[in-house]
Length: 240
Image (tube, rainbow, N blue to C red):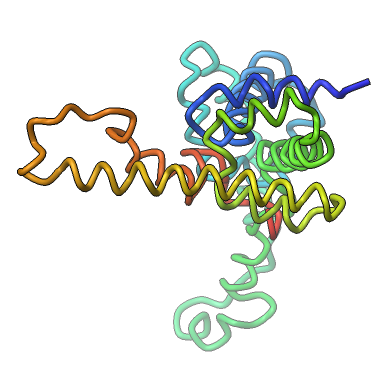
């Protein structure tokens, strides 16, 4: 039986971005929605927010898109600020004035407090997306030989460079990875051709010609090299 991720990938291949990026954007939106409307009062969620000092910068600001979830945001951020204040209040007394400058790097100095204020846990959204990302890439490599997925991938934008690197470093069989390399190379050759056509038609001598698919090739090239906007949070696990 094929995993649900297989069908998710086939559907996501219909877009103009890396299909894995597309799915992760969807998953982040679903997770944040669930976080605000179902888990804002959950003790485990509060503990995770305290440990992580909230979400990473990227996903914290994504919360502001949920206008109806502002109460949930206030509840969760209260846990974060309360944890910060607790750590400050419980810190050992520090020397003042010149002594603070002299002993600032000591066990009781300001730098020690800064260390205590560092996150002790992951951004919940980054953690969730890292797990989903691994599942999607495994499904892609494992089932790329399926005619439905291969056909969809050929019509897609292909993987972005970050996800392509991650897939190549995964545990997939050599033959499957070779197939992925061949298909991905086709997608980038096509994108390069569109970029060159865009540049050529931008010349005044061809200004009368109507732009085709190459019109937004420059924008798609950014996503292909860097990944879709807002996919890679600031606390993703190393190598992800």
